[in-house]
Image (cartoon, rainbow, N blue to C red; front, side, top):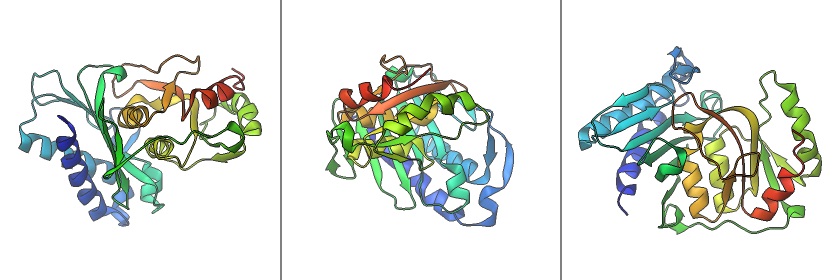
Length: 266
């Protein structure tokens, strides 16, 4: 594997840095508005700074595309670290133990170009990882999606609609049809949970989610045998920028994806 050792080193540094502020009053302090348009908090900045420090120490010569700092040029090579320093910041600042850092490596400026990713779960420290063509792993355990019938499916749905009631209207048929519905508050982790069989699908139909948030988890899920689609049923792709927003459906199997897509009422 070519890229995972660097990403795992970044994940280790991020976890160490984040846990130093996790649970403190300072962690939730707002600093400024990040490149994505959302407020950067101390815990986000600490995580991003730790990644940049390691990359510079390793002599990385590409660019960093980050939710907080935007596009940070560290050299002229066509390699990109795609970083969401803390996915699930609200959980993190309220000491809800379901949040992560998401770090991907891409050879181009589109989601389809991502070739490796790690997602480090806090506060457990478990690392989900994958490199294209080498499979997906949770620590040293190889991951495979679990193929269940839709009647047994556990479906994650992002209901943080942010004054977009039409999204809830579109999702209601899905919610009514799904045997079990969950909302945990960290999309990257929820996708990794599909990869390990805890969830069977996840839908974010708001058009508000940053593409950066799913860059690492997408390759992990796909290497575990799952899939990510647009709401039109096409393979998911988008430009990798701090401001690109997407909607998508992820699932363990094509059959579950089709069951959910036909119920969306857009």
